[in-house]
Length: 169
Image (cartoon, rainbow, N blue to C red; front, side, top):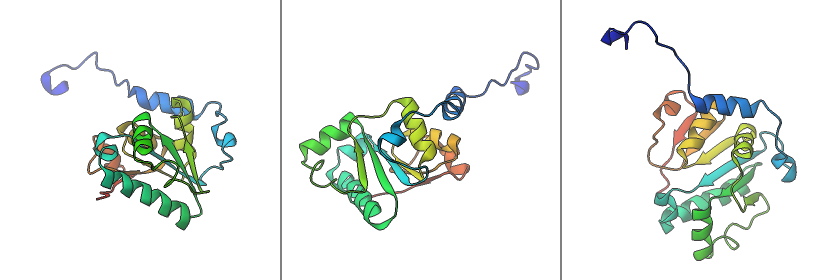
C-alpha cells in the first residue's frame, strides 16, 4: 500500500486461523486423548479426504499400506480420522474392516470436531494429511506435517520447514 502512496490507516491485523488455533490450543483440552488412551507425542494423526486420493484405488491403497507399515514399524499408534468421503470409499472397496485392522491403528469413525482436531494435531508426533487446512494448523502448532499430495496450496509451510510433501505413487 505504501508503494501506492497510502501511508496512513494501515493496520496489520494478523490471520484469523492463527488466532483461532492459538486460542483453542491454549484452552481446556477435550477428552479425545483420554478417550483413546493417547499420550502426547505417542501417535501419528492421519486424515485423507481429497478426491485425488480417495478416487484412485492405487493411491488409496498406497496410503493404507503406508499406515499399516507405520503401525507395525514404529512405536507410535496411528490415529486415522475418517472423512465421510474416505469412509464411503473404504467401505465400498471392502478396505475398512479388512485392511485397516491393526491394534496400533485407531480409526475415528466420524471426523473429530475442530477443537478435537486442533488438540490431536498439537499432541501428535507427526500429522499426515492431504488437507490444506491441517497443513496450516500443524505449522501454526509447530507439529511436523507430511502432505499426502503432489503439491500444496500452503507453500509458506514448506518454507517454514514444518511440512514435507510426498508423492505416494
